Length: 409
Image (cartoon, rainbow, N blue to C red; front, side):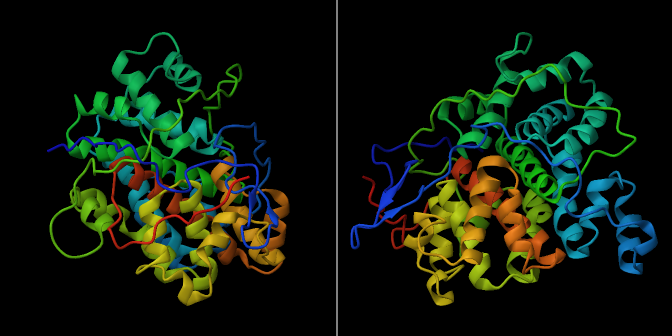
């Protein structure tokens, strides 16, 4: 059932974090090529909503039907009622959020530890407040909740549970997983458990980025809060070179490799499908700005397969007027103010888990609420996709266009 990845000695062009880059044709200096790593600096979360939860008095029949559908499984709190402003987003996000927090193949305790650690890493107090209640219901004690915040090196974890927390830390910081962590999980987990463990972290990260950027606050009735005495710390080894063979081999047949890889776990794939479907078929963003956001977050995460497909046959970036190398060079590579704000949005969500105030204001001056929510969803979804591609080892094809050669002084 398992295929453990192999690593080559060649690092793909472009795998670096740099303070500046130089255009070899003009000699002009460009700003930072990739942002600093996630969790590398403290970030203050919003104390009030940017997008307010939708009051029940304003619900349409469609929105009331969604509440009735999901109320048996999830809390209809601030997060749900904010997402309710775009009903198609509810239908895209909630099935996979429910799958990863309630229905996946993982033991409930394992799942709770992964989700809580990801919520802590993203500093989403709203998700922590929701998920701590579920964790307590499956036997996670108050002492262990405190220990989740303290991280994998805190005294008291058994080795496997510490490895689960390291999986979350590495996915969040590096958008990838070292062989040592993967193999330790694979000693106990089958393919379905491995994929579900990755997706528990990645989906929680997605929802946290939505909540953080929209300013979702914990419900007034929430009892669980972050442990006040645990400082934010994230100590993760440097990422290993990219995988050169898949850890989870795609099914044989036609279609792109990511779809055939996810098809190894049909229940997971079915629950997740609506998220990318929203971004690519329902979102009001133009193809130009959609692909700009997707490629920038793929570059930041160094997800070469995602980059290749959105430059190539899936996203067709150049057909929409985008030059991929310019996207890699970052927000100061000659964009106009509105374009640069999209690049910064992808950078800030990647690094901080939230769009900064200045960038938000620039985008909101031209975008309505639905479009603003879709900007965040586009980046958050493809952050999830990037982390998943890297962890599972989905490989580009020999004919794919890989990362551009960006000169570094």
